[in-house]
Image 1 (cartoon, rainbow, N blue to C red):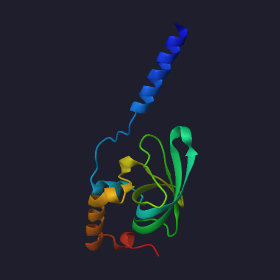
Image 2: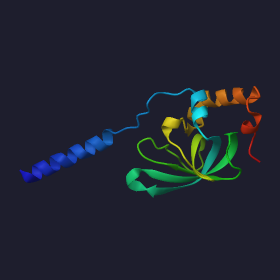
Image 3: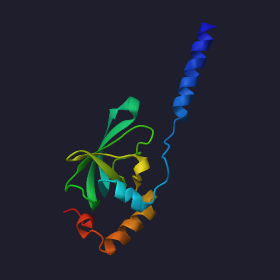
Image 4: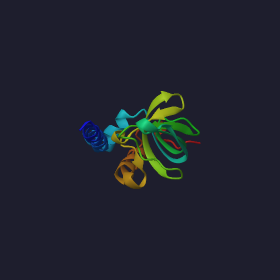
Length: 144
C-alpha cells in the first residue's frame, strides 16, 4: 500500500510538471514587444550550453546580425530558462527581445516575442516598416 501511494504521488508530480507549459499573460503586438524590450536583435546562435538543467536554463552566444534597438556590437550572451525558454539551436537565426543582466549578457523568453526568424515574419515586417519610416534611426542601424 505504501509503495502504491509513493508511485501514485510520483506519477502525479511528473504529470503536473509535464503539464506546466509556457503561459504568457496575453499575446503582444510587435510594437508592444519592441517597447518592452531593452534591446531587439536578429542574430545567429554560435554556441549553446546548459546552465541549470533542472530549470531548463541555457546560455547562448549570439552573433548580432542586426540591432533593431540598442544592442552592443559583437556577440552577446543570452540566457533563457524555465517553461517559457526560447528553444535555441546552434547555427539557427532568431529575433530576440532582450532584457539586460549585465553589459553584454541578456535574458529572454518566448513571452517577450523571441522566436526563430522563420516564426517571426510578422514582427520582422513591422520592424522593417518602422526602420524605413525613419523612426529612431540610431536604434535601427545595423551593427558594424
